[in-house]
Image 1: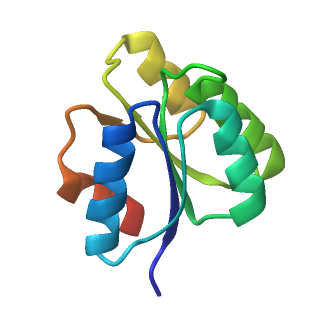
Image 2: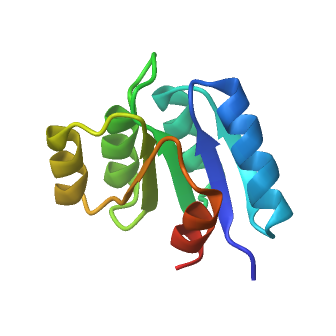
Length: 116
C-alpha cells in the first residue's frame, strides 16, 4: 500500500516538484501547505503516514509545526527538508529523532526515506 504524505514548504515550486515526483513514484500526496500553521492543520485533518516539512518558513517555522504535530501524535513520521546545514539545526532534529534531507536534495533519497 502506498504511503500518504503531506508536503510543506514556503517555496511553491518546491512543493509542486515534490508532489509531482512523489506521485510519479506511487506515493499518495494528500495535502500541500506553505507554512507551519498549515502543516499542523493539515496533519490534524489528514493523518498522513509521513510529513515532509521545510524548516525555515514564515507563519510558523518547521520546528513550530514539528512540536505541535508531535504533541498531537508523538510517533508521527516527520522528515525535515532544509538548506540550513547548521550544526545546531542538525542537533535539534537528532534529539527529535527526525531525519534531515539537505537541499538541494536527491529525490531517490527522499523516496527511500519515505518508504522505510
